Image 1 (cartoon, rainbow, N blue to C red):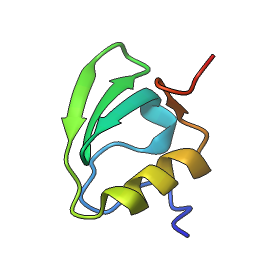
Image 2: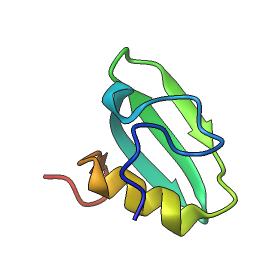
Image 3: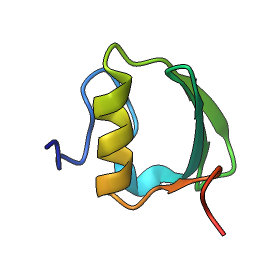
Image 4: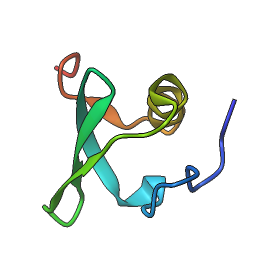
Length: 63
């Protein structure tokens, strides 16, 4: 379990993230600043877990 503020290979801290959506290991992320970024990690399952640990909302499942 990776509870670090930063995920390896990803330049943004969890506090900067608002929501995300993922398709086939490719993440589209809305930052709190309003900017939209894209990230394709080597280990998508670990990145997804890291997002969930830090309570970053998955647009597909958010109310």
